[in-house]
Image (cartoon, rainbow, N blue to C red):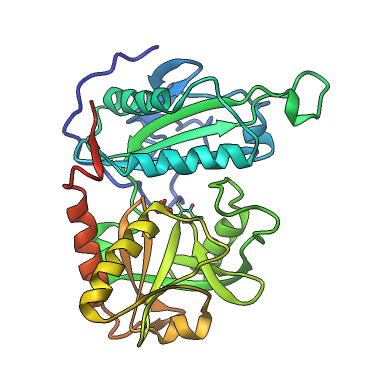
Length: 337
Ligand code: PLP
């Protein structure tokens, strides 16, 4: 079934349900929306093979190397109250990633932008998580040469997903700094947004085993770098610090750096992009994580120890408030057309 894009709807943007224990595998007797399986996303629309289809019908060929080898790059923008936030920055990063991976598409940036708008409009979602993907595609029969592949473009819009819901953000997240080491930047360039997530997922399980809500991973030198889907910032005694190397240059990180520079001038708190050690992190006055999937999210405990006073701190709250205000600034948003 091909969907006709309706006008943007009033969906409030349900967060993705947590806790997988009660969920059934795809294909099991209780699979599907009709049986109430929370694992099947029923709201949303995707662009696959040149068509917009309901998200539940969006499938990719099993031989696509994006699936078989994680040979892909992607980007995620969000739509908040019917508006894309910093879509140009997401498209820039997506294009840079494709170039670094030697991928190209027959469609240009404006066509990609149009498809993303179409997905959101077709989904009817006012608050959406919008993903664009370029995969290597399928190899020619018998070939193992990536140059023989025709790169593929896919996109979809689903309900906005929070790394920490607004309720969790009021308490602040509890984080475990995992012993799982982040994949080395010399092996997989973290500035190319990629699906090499096994370290991040193992870190997440490690965090759950330590009764924490999420994880941070460190590099080979023991410096904290990033977590599953987010960058990290620490407000230390003398600066607002975020890791410089070994991380995805998040669009939310960029926004936090811009707000931090503005606020830093007011508070005499310089912004520093540099290595962040474990000791500095746990001794920080405030810690927060940043992601398109949730914005600026306070961290109130690390490895069972409270961060600062154990509640979201004033610098974090101010950056968070300015971040959401920027969503109303026409310089940063574009209306879903
Ligand atoms: N780091 C990693 C590994 C990510 O996957 C993400 C987003 O998915 C981020 C950081 C945050 O990036 P952004 O702020 O652009 O969402």
